[in-house]
Length: 52
Image (cartoon, rainbow, N blue to C red; front, side, top):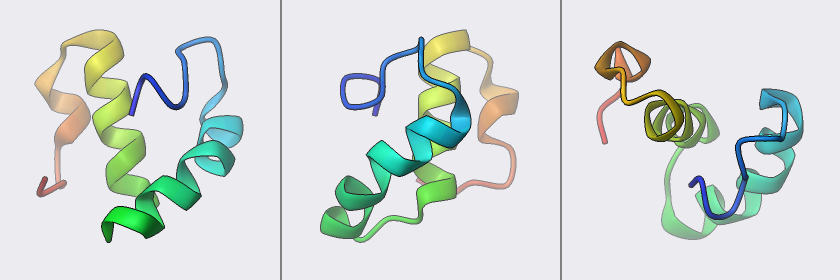
């Protein structure tokens, strides 16, 4: 997710970029954003409530 939506993008901009990828792989955009936040921070709390 971080390769598609780099860290310099805001969550709003990242959601726009990640939407086609998430649709293609059958994942919700919110889960994609959570995975991106985890990749940026390394904090597992970013994944709270998300099943990947």
